[in-house]
Image 1: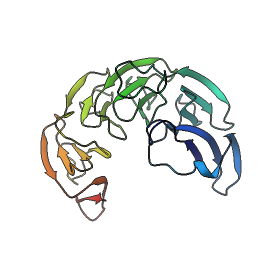
Image 2: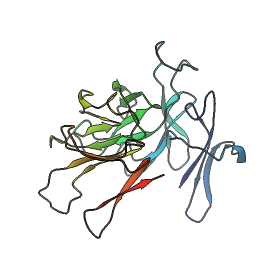
Image 3: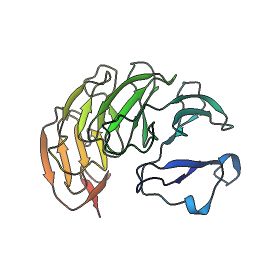
Image 4: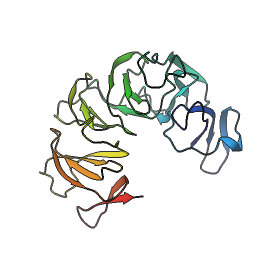
Length: 251
């Protein structure tokens, strides 16, 4: 397991920085530690930019994270740095610009190149900009939209390359926007999923949004809203094994 601590800076929870990483076994033995843990840095209410993933396909997991304004890859066994690159600069037109470079937010991996496995890295900020990087950390493309919390990769057209469903939008593997409801819905997407959850293997996949105060929303792959149920502030959804019923969690 990999545990991170973060230091809140500037405003609310929008520009947190990872202060410590600790890798432990399931028995609690510490494998390695980077940074200095502190009990005051244990709480957070935001996405944190670190993940465990076999980014190079060698059968061993790496740690991919953003720290000190750099996108970094660490050796999963030791925590030692393997490679790093500066994050993109924050444009002058950004609503908040406390630093020269972005500090990052959530990270997801996607198959944008059509090869074997998910080797590309998709990163977003909170809540407007996002970037796609190759596994060697070179920038593929970038975009700006209502990002929500966590992107979802899915091969929507069967071409062997995954699209990126992010917030209220869908982008293809080249970073071209297929559609977006940015500005049409007032809140953001707390969680999303794409797939066929009906129990009928021939049914078309759908897009499922838990869109905060906008409620639970179901769309087709072309971005048409099929159903919207306002059940309060929806944060996430889960599929039960008893049938094709989605249960939205409202807070």
